Image (cartoon, rainbow, N blue to C red; front, side, top):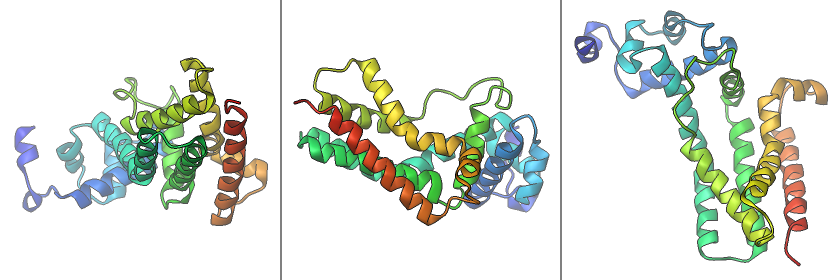
Length: 230
């Protein structure tokens, strides 16, 4: 194994972040279409246009590649949503007024919607995540821990709900409120094909994303405003 990982392009094993990224993007697509058990590393290598041993070089095994796919999705999510989340964290630390915090929550959802639906590989990521949450198609052992990105975003949302409601809500109630608010987007993401069929959409266009964001924003402001302390 050590000798394999030391080989370079001249010996037949491509190196570089570009090749690694290409393998990961290809794997996300194939794992999303067929599930973890339904695709082989050789098939992934062929689709990515790299020699099969290069997957072992970069990821050691199929499980390592799958974990790299999850980490890539988390990193992409933070790149898209992180700047907004950091702004909200600063607002919370500065103890700004409730109306600004509600606007901050809506801004997080706007960024989440853009990440889930407006990026070029959004549909393939959605398929991967749907397969990942199915016990029939994911690896036997679940990936390690929860997403640090997800925890940080969820922490922002929970802090806003806590500030809006004062001391009225328990931690569990805050968790349910955040889940139902954020679920407005997550349900469309995870049930994308069903939603498109239900709405009579051939695909989720930029105009439809804008409509979705506007309605989610309106409903979120209504929900949070209803919880404001008198």
